[in-house]
Image 1 (cartoon, rainbow, N blue to C red):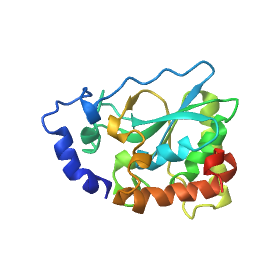
Image 2: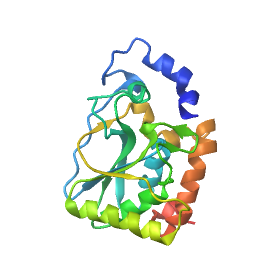
Image 3: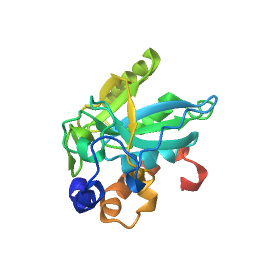
Image 4: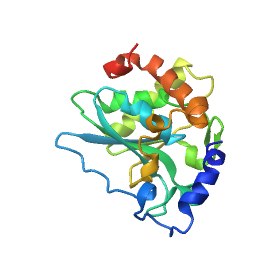
Length: 218
């Protein structure tokens, strides 16, 4: 559904643009910001990065979130390339956070409730390996946290089916085009956001209410 909604827009946006990340308005790829002093980063992919990035940004201790691509082999991919399912990348969110306010464990737990981690290579109407559930670790401790949470959530039977999230070592993250950044808030009236993204974010707010920034708590 998401690809269909963006089909015409994609034709206009990428017409005449060479493969790879280049500069030019909405298709510009700005350099990833370096973590500030004391700041740490985490990377998760759970379907469309519009809703995932919004959900994670609403957590206390999260300073900024960048939408992009990870988990594949193609260097500097564009959205159109990732959508062909030939790059190996998944739509992901790079989360910059203050570990004195929120832990990796809390972020990881939130990730498992920001999407349905039991759906294989899809999220709702979005189908393909680029929408797969994937969690990256940078240390052995983070790997243990992720595997522990999967075991815990599976045992709780919160989801009817077992979690299929890939747990893999982090390699490289590529920022998505500028028009993807902050897309949820900038396009609240778009059909996809209203019908698909917003329900996911609203559900996330209910589950993670205690961990949300005050303006998102109810």
